[in-house]
Amino acid sequence: MIGGVATSALGAGSSDARAVAPLVQAGAPAFHSFRLGGFQLTVVSDGVIVTGDPKRTFVGAPPEEIASTLSASYLPTDRVILDENVLVVNTGSRTILFDTGSGLLQAYGPGAGRLLSNLEAAGIRPADVDAVVLSHGHADHVCGLVVQGRIMFENAQFYINQVDHDFWLDPARQQTPLKLFHEQALLNLLPIRERLIFIKDGEEFLPGVQALLAPGHTPGHTMFMINSGRETLAYLADLARHHILDLEAPRLEFIGDIDPGLCVQTRTRMLDMIARDRIPVLSYHFPFPGVGHVAKWGDRYRFYPSGMLTAADPAKPL
Image 1 (tube, helix red, strand yellow):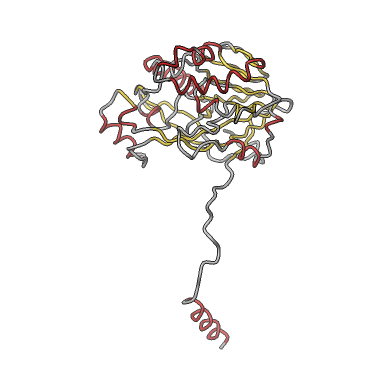
Image 2 (image 1 turned 90 degrees about the vertical axis):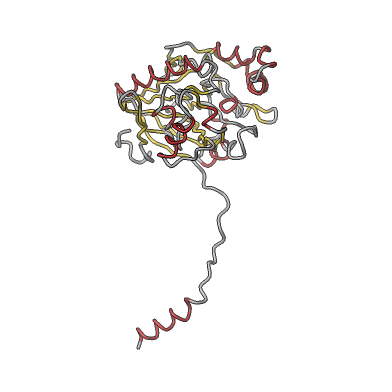
């Protein structure tokens, strides 16, 4: 009888069932923390940017081959979607932020510019950042420095390679297709010039942070080795932007590189070293959070994401 009543009640209610919760419109805050030796690392998303048709922007293979490579990885073939993974390193005595996202710049679409809200969600205040390290001067890396005329990291010292700094501020860029980047460099790099320090190849300019010049994408593009105890992570910046095309077809040239040929040479040289030494990586543009390993795959490479490591499990290796 009880079973019969229960069945009857469920049956009567099922025809009137309604979803009472509204569809969620906003995305969840995007940040992810893990340990590297004695450091705490947090990857904070600035969102995603959308670039043009990869069959036109990547050069060195037939368009159908590029489309086939993307399709085999279940990726769109008419556009490239890239994450923006901003790294924050807490050494215990310093809070270091690597690159700053796209700010309010709309050129890359509406999906970017979320760094400040995600920093807040991660419990990181811009005022607590005392070092901002810039891998290069492209707009999607520097436009979070100054927002509506205000320096967002008011207590920070800023670091960049001088060759890259001077290249983007050169007035000669104004009359070229690089005009947008030049204008954004003026808006974001000039206001911080009194607190700017130029870094050199091979220099450990902050405790546990070593600069490695990786030119080609831009003249002074720099990647960084982050070291704590016996553990190392390579922050690739834009050494490889696309986790499929730049690794599985590493000799493709990209029209956004200042020196595409040099970029290919630098990428393969650095990735060979990283794969050989089994150094975990973080790439600025790989799918969030962009952490994993790069392995040699014949004359190509593959990216193996590490998944969502947790700060609560510091013993879990990268």
